[in-house]
Structures are given as structure tokens and as C-alpha cells.
Image (cartoon, rainbow, N blue to C red; front, side):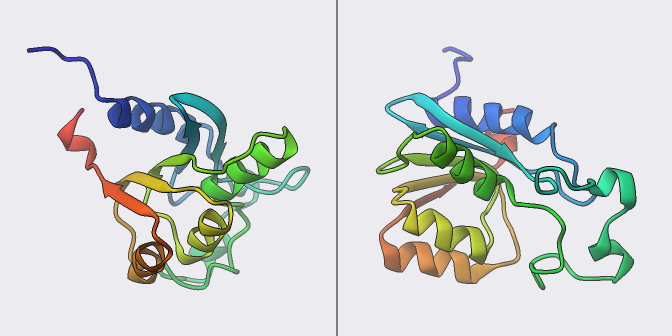
Length: 153
């Protein structure tokens, strides 16, 4: 018997390290896009480039008592999945056929970007109160796996 993590566990653990860079006060989320066992890009949730982070000015969602999974437009942060896709695009790394590893189940906004990025598999640790995203993935033919951290920590 070995303690060697599976490939999915390995990249999920990397996503948890990426999440440590998050500047969100509510959820620290990390994402890693991988193809052929090679990292194409990473992303974490935080304010857009050159804007103040929530760590510095506070969270508009907390200030307005906005529930998790709702009113995505009322968030200063670019989501981890979005940042990973943006970084891949900026650096010319095609996401075609890739796998996205994420600390949290993608929201519906990220789900639509993932589908249009032609990412074929999504593996995540924590569930999210947005079941529409799972239905979108199913209809679009994107494979989805939930691996709770307790399964490999």
C-alpha cells in the first residue's frame, strides 16, 4: 500500500495551494488547468488587475448580506476558474480537451466559460449551492467528479 496520491488528488492538492493566494474574505478558491498531466495555468479568486482587493477594502457581499451562490455580479473578485482561463489565453495555452481542478464546484458563470473553453473534465473538492452548473455540464458532455478532501487528506 502506498500514500502516493492519484493524479486527480495530486492536482487538487496543487489547487488548494493556489487558493492560498486568494484575496477573497469569504471563500479562498484555487483552480488549475491541466492537459496531458501538465499544468497549463492556475488561478485564484481576487480583484481584477490594478484594483483594490477585498482584503484591503472589505467585502461588498458581506456588507450587503448576499447569500453564497447568488448575485454573482455583486462580487469584486474574478473567480479562480475565470482567472485560470484568462491566464491560459494570455499566454497562448489552449484549453481544448483539458481538465480543470478546483477547490470548489464552479458557479454557473464559470461553468459557461469552462464549457466554451472546451475543457472536457472538471474535478472539484467542495460543493457549491448552484445545481444549475452541474446540469449545464451534463448537457454539454463535460465529465464532472467531486472528490471531497477527506478522501485524500
